[in-house]
Image (cartoon, rainbow, N blue to C red; front, side, top):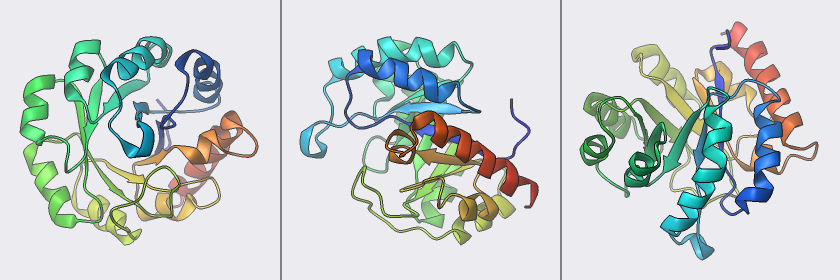
Amino acid sequence: MSEQSCRLYLITPPRFEPGAFADTLKAALDAGDVACLQLRLKGENEAPPDADAIRRAAEILMPLVQARDIAFLINDRPDLAAELGADGAHIGQTDMAYAQARKILGPDRIIGVTCHASRHLAMEAGEAGADYVAFGAFYKTDTKEPISKAEPEILTWWSELFELPCVAIGGITPENAAPLVRAGADFLAVSSGVWSHEGGPAAAVRALNRIMIEESTGR
């Protein structure tokens, strides 16, 4: 475990070839502290991914992730997370009710909930028993069309009132991460800001960890 109070939450690219991506992922995971990896695949035109594509990606990537004591989460599909032995799932507001996801995954696996920019949705998720709440999008993102625009003060509000961890998501890069760490994010969820970084994914992970350590000590 790292001593820093904000940690990196990696999200996979929406489309990749798992065998070829494995080495890229290993380099990123070995470059610095990573708390978890969320497998978030998308089909063409934001269509839901094929279940077998999720299975194949998980079978290749999950052992690499879990061997490094990093949590492996699957987006949108608690059923596949349970089937494949993942550490948990992330669900959006339109995917599945939290109670149903918890019934599928049992009491011990991680379930995180997208709360957009809504304090009400976050409090509901926390009261229901979610393991973390995710706020965003904080910045413009190329990964998906954001439903909401969040401001850093929602992270401050949450972290001052609740013990439950909060995740900041949406367009985060090493260049714009610092204000979100200072605002109180427990995790920074990053996808293209790592995989498309001009210096390569490992350099992005190192840079984000450096920022999180520097900014965490000042908050």
